[in-house]
Length: 148
Image (cartoon, rainbow, N blue to C red; front, top):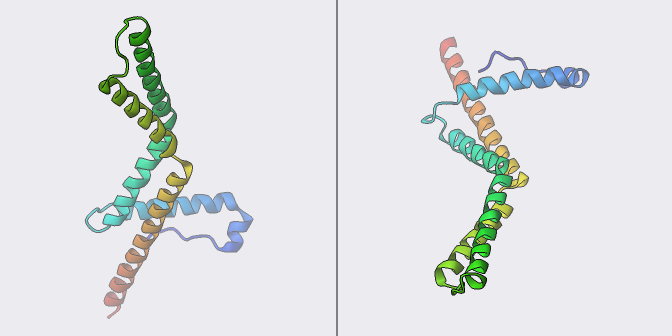
């Protein structure tokens, strides 16, 4: 399947950094072998899910800051209408805008999380390892047929 021989437990304990490098090379080869979306649709789907959660988690502070700025902006506008312009501030449109901005802020606080990202990464890793089992099975079948 890959040309990489994984280290034994003993050699991994003796040189963990080297073992990590070897494992990284092997996983990279498995990722290359599983890029066919038609053959490995679950690997692709979980990779996309992991990428989404990783990116969402990475920009969470930008989303939170933007949503809070919009929420504060709508509140400031409503206060300006009521105190300076002497107009009705609690119009349905203003209340809806305030609720939508507040909801966005709440979602940016709740949805992107390290736990969600880790869960997505684990699902992707599981599907990648399942694909490795499939590749190994195919290799075993081909090797058995060649021996006949």
